[in-house]
Length: 430
Image (cartoon, rainbow, N blue to C red):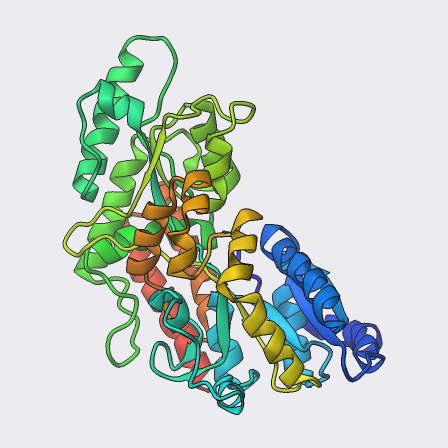
């Protein structure tokens, strides 16, 4: 996953440009036309293809605004705050949803379902994915539908596990033991270095994404029942100490690693294990990209004090409250997230959010990791559902990275992180 952009003074400048450029385009649409904002990349590409097909079937024109990930959040938030109605539909990364929903920027979908004689979405959607679309989380009104069902997986070299008589890791202690065994035995021969584990620990989102499954497994929580930060609990500090132990078997410089560096080590065969996202799976089966083709296995997160749970990272589709064509937008939204269309999206490279698509025989043959992906998605959990998450994540990631680079002890890092998160929460209450 990428670093989450923060909404700052820069967005004010973008607002001026936005109102003079994008907004007039919305005003020029015919009543029957729609405008759709999507991210650059495979997630947005699939929805763009669906939009072209929908146009040919229905005659409804869909104007597509494609933006790099780093710009999409700011542009969407600008439109939602200004209520320009420039977009009838938006794709959004699920950590953005609490902010959009809390500020009452999105359309409640239930009345649109009821208008068509339906109570709501069918039960084929994976529950953890659909829960992301509700505010309050899991129990509130429905403001979006899930389109891309990403959740983390645990990657490991099955050939090395077999060679050293290791079992698939069920716990983080298993992971640490396997990292030590592989690191020591593989490097004893002098035939080429293999690191036992590799992880992202660069400041911000990278460090947080790789840490949260460990943090949760150790029984830690970011907030208590009253919303007070608790990252410096005994469980939280123990989790970071464990991450630092894993770092002893990671490549030098891992404290500055992002997804590209982690995947490069895995693809080159110089690291044995990692947390990663499904987008990288296909590369491991391509001999042109991977030196370990056919040797990588994918499974769910290991556990510890608590069961293993991956971080979920779905892409959602929502209708802004100021959308000019909400009814037509809803018809497209339901069509685009149907099982038939989601299968086409899956064939284009996106993990689905419907169980029937995960279990489709054609897709299972093409994507053998789907059973593990479905198990991971069904047991996954979201990042804390707070509109302040972007700022909290960036701050937390700074202290995690500093601990991994040796600047701070685990206890110092968590205590300082907790103090800074308390300040963010206090500002948010003002």
